[in-house]
Length: 316
Image (cartoon, rainbow, N blue to C red; front, side, top):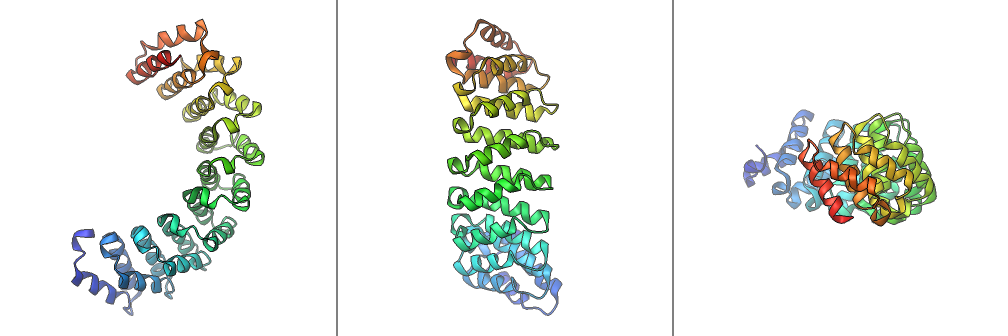
C-alpha cells in the first residue's frame, strides 16, 4: 500500500489501531505507518509512535522504531530522539538494534551528547547487531560525533570478535575525517589489513585511503603494498585505491613495481585501480616501464581498464 494509501482516514484508523488490545494489530499499524513514510508523519502519528516505544510487547516497540526511522528527519523531534536514545537500553536486542537504525536515519538532529553517550555504551552491547548498529550511527554523525572517547571506542571495536562490527567500526572511522587519524587508529587499521575476513581487509584499505596523506606512514604504505598481493580481488583493488589517494607520498619504488605487476591482474577492477593509482603518483611514476605498461593496457580486453590507462597516461 505505502504512500498511496496515506489518506487522512486511513492514517486516523491506523492511529486508533496503535491502541488496540491485540499486539499483532498494534505491530501491523506500526508497519503500515512506516511504509507510508513522511506522508504519514503528522504530529499525532509521531507522538503515538513515540508512545509505542514503551509498549509492553517487544515486537511493537521494534516496529515503532522502524516506523519512526522510515519517517526520517521529519520525525526527529527532541521527544522522539530522547525516547529512541532510551530504547538503546531496552531489554530486547532487536529493539536496541532497531533504535540504532532509526537514529541513523534522523541525520544530525540525533547527534546530541546524550545520544552519543548512549551509542558509546551500545558499542559494548552483548548483541553483535547492536554493536554494529552503534558503529554505523556514529559514522553517519561524522565529525559531530568525533570526540576522543568515540574514536577510542571505535578503535577498540576494530578488534571485536564479530566481523560485521569490525567492518562497521572501520567505516565509521573513515567518515570522521582527520580527527580520527590518530596513531592508535592507524595502527589498528594496519592490523585489520591482516584480518581473517576479506571484507574487513577491504574496508581497512578503504578507510586508510579516505584518511589520505595523513595516514601515509611508511608502515601503512608497506602494508598496503603487500595487500596488492592479497588472495581476494576486492582487497587488491582496495589497496590500489588507497595507495592512489595517498598520491606521491606512496610512490616508493616497491609500490610502483607492485602496481606495475597489478596491471596484469586477473581482476579488471584491480587492473583499473592500478592504472588510477599510477596516474595519481606524479613524476615519481614517470618511468619508461610504467609508461610502456600503461600503453599496453590501452589494449586491455576490458574497455574501462583501457579508458583508465588512457587517463593515467594523460595525467602523467
